[in-house]
Length: 164
Image (cartoon, rainbow, N blue to C red; front, top):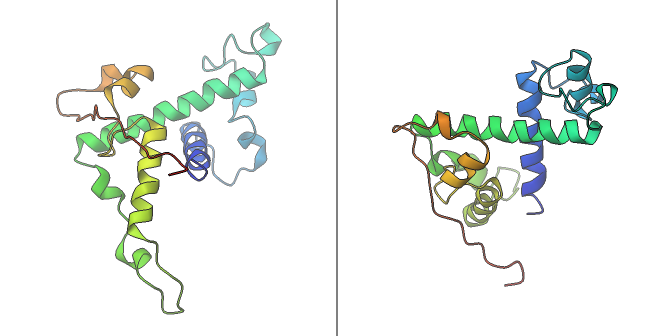
């Protein structure tokens, strides 16, 4: 998961900040705590009860809660896209990234990318088709947004051990 975890962390963080309408270029002010200090200053429900000034949890608790919100947002987006027909095939690399560049730079090996995608899906709690599993949807409290037109994947991805 050496490459996967940082990607997921960035996706979750950006999901939160984008939902707060925070531009990517705002700088470290909002990135370090995912906007928790700003939300606490507004007495926002997302951090209510977790505000030290109010006798609640500490800053790491607020950031952890917002990171979980980011995971929910990213998975909710995937559920919407799944309902519209999006799946693993839409995550494939375009041909220019798979082929050698004119300057001799090697293209990305599709099999290596597929293995990385499997690790990404497994870390997200999604199945091999790139769709969230029912267990992940339940864990994130998103079962209420899934309708009959929203496909889920209940298969787990069995990853080979890193040593073999």
